[in-house]
Structure formats: structure tokens, C-alpha cells
Image 1 (cartoon, rainbow, N blue to C red):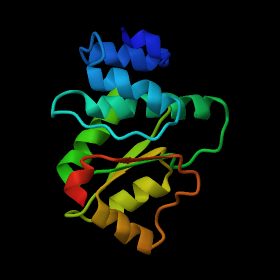
Image 2 (image 1 turned 90 degrees about the vertical axis):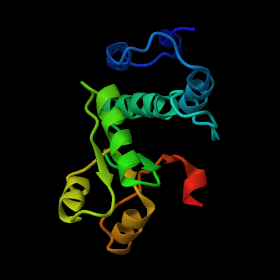
Image 3 (image 1 turned 120 degrees about the vertical axis):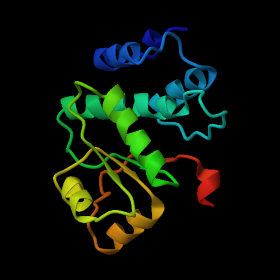
Amino acid sequence: MPFTKFGLRREILRNIEKAGYVRPTPVQAAAIPKVMQRHDLIGIAQTGTGKTAAFVLPILDRISLANHAGEPRGTKALVLAPTRELAIQIMENVRGYGDGLPIRVAAIFGGVEEGAQIKAVQRGVDIIVATPGRLIDLLGKQRVDFSLLETLVLDEADRML
């Protein structure tokens, strides 16, 4: 089954092709339709099987569609990751797959000054990728607003338990 069967936006399909994907991996083929239909999902697959794309692609599609439809802008997706390195990697994937779409993403994680991260979030983002510790800090300071949140992803949830 090609990626075109999922009904993803043209820009996303172009970015998938730029990334070198030809066909979805098994985890992508199973997960993308479920996420697009807003079903809850637990996905387990080996490293390197495309799990990040399996959740990022349908999230980008849904947020892009909502933004074009004139729905209120705000943080609609939160991705929690156990490490700063993974949070940065996910953010870069979101930017790559979302190239050309009017979608804003920010990563918030510890180990660095929080000021720039707070400014990025307060300017308005559609997707936040965060580590739990820094997210808890910013929630305690009321620096993030999840009133429009629709999607929560726990990436590598087993490592955050």
C-alpha cells in the first residue's frame, strides 16, 4: 500500500518522498489510519521501523486541515519523550515532514535555559515536544496552555515509567 492511500495532504506526501520513503512500514500501515480516525493506540515496534512517522504524519495532516479550516490556533498535540535528544529528534522530524505547512512546533526540555523555550511556546505553537521534567516546571509556572489539546503521544513510554 502506498502512502497516497492514507489521504495525507499533498505537502506531507512530497516530504515523505523527499525523506526517501516509498512504502509505509508495517507499524506505519497499522497506525496511520487509526491515528487519522482519532483512535487511541499503543504501538510497539523495533527501533528504526518508522514509529515516529507513524504518529507524526497523521498529526500533521489533522492540524494542517484544522488550521486551513479556520479553527482556533493553539497547542493541539503534545509529544512526551524521555530525553532531550529524543525530543529534539522528534521536533526535527515534525519540521521535516511538515515542511511547507503552516504548523509551528517547539521542543521544551531541561538542561538549558528555559527562557527561549518559554518564548517559543508563548508565540504560539501547534505541537509541543517535551520531556516530563521541563513540562512539569512550565506547567507549574503556567507557561503552557493545553486548552485546545487534542492529541497526546507518549514516545518510549516504558522509559518514562
